[in-house]
Length: 295
Length: 329
Image 1 (cartoon, rainbow over the protein chains, first blue to last red):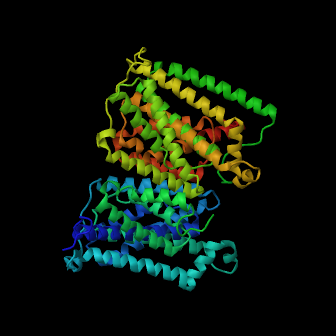
Image 2: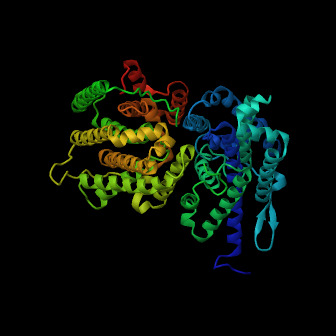
Image 3: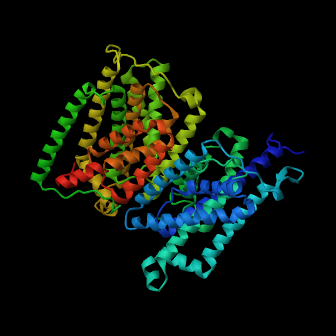
């Protein structure tokens, strides 16, 4: 067996895998934030709470209705997306003529409400969610043990991220979306229903967050606070990557997850703060973010 | 920044003098109120009043940046909480007198503000808010991971109230209350002075139209950094005083939810008003006291107030009164 700087390979690759998984969540969540911000000009502070909702909807489907993991992977994002559509139609659309800051404050308030309601109902301790039977166990790769479920999370989130990128960059619908982001008034003048596009975009962004939540449910315990700290890290990821580019958000998300994993191996004390430190360095060197367009 | 709703009609010199006479009267009323409040039954608990005053100063410091500089910091808990730790630690473990530990706490808020401010002003608007929040979260993790300094989950409890200058003992809550009231009054008078100085006028110009201020030759970033440091120092002063008054510094003070609370106080009271944050702090702290036994409902109620304020009550309590009186308060 080889060793790297005195670190056993099992530990190294194990942490790298964990980092990759965290990176998947960063990528999906920052992707959703970027898509929403592009069209709505609102930073969706509720994103963390909606990720948590995704995990809880999966848990409720299983324990109350008996619907398992695979249908939940589709149903939970749809349910959460519908709540997102309602929020956009009733609340957010009243803010588009105001400063961006009000959108942040409103979605922060919504996040407090949602987290408070779930904490009232389910308490603060986590609820368990079983790994689906098909994905239990794992593969021995020789240098490390790869749990099947974790491999699935990385693959699934990569696929979802790339599919989102494809839809936005390569399809007609995506072209409408990009046009509306660039100039909503002109796009509407061409006969495209921009308000509907905005509503669906918000619903889609929320659905992405909920999808990440369902993926996370079997790894982390399902907990009302699971999204609150995560969303702040995702904000830092967004600042590092810049919100101008979809691919940028994906690359930054996975990359920062890996760096965080490496930090856990070599200097665990800094693992909680490393992303914030990187953010500070990026702000010093390239204030617009790695993939951002200068404002 | 153009559409932050702050009612500021350009005032002629005679109107301005009229307004400052009104403000002077209000300050005198406030000072008189602070003197007599401990003797009024029902609300006259010095402990409760001290908490309100510390948070009111905190909210005023935050409002200096948001209301007059147009900068939304979502991480003000960092300066408040860190200063609170420094003040509590130096009072408890070094045996420093209150004025020394409060000064050290304020200085730590200023240094932190200088470091974070010089990073955050590199981006504008929504990014500025996210950066300040992320940097503040770093302070939270630091506090969580250094229990030798912060006491970890327990916080620093039973902070001693040493004698001021080694002479005047803070033997009971009432004496301490008057110290806190004096600090509070000094703090808001300083803020008032800053807002109405030439520096404050430039700040408002930057808030209303940054590009124009740049084209007029103002070094906008220096002004932003200056107001950031000033606001962080005053938030530090509030936190350091709170540690002495309430005799506790804990993780709650550096948590992001505290950053949200100070935004809420300012929003409820009226951002960009002199007296709004004081009213807002009193309302929110009273509400927390009132609902303390209901657990997560406090969070839910705060969330609802946020949503309602943003949708239909953006001027805040004092903002609405000011509009009604047709005078900026």
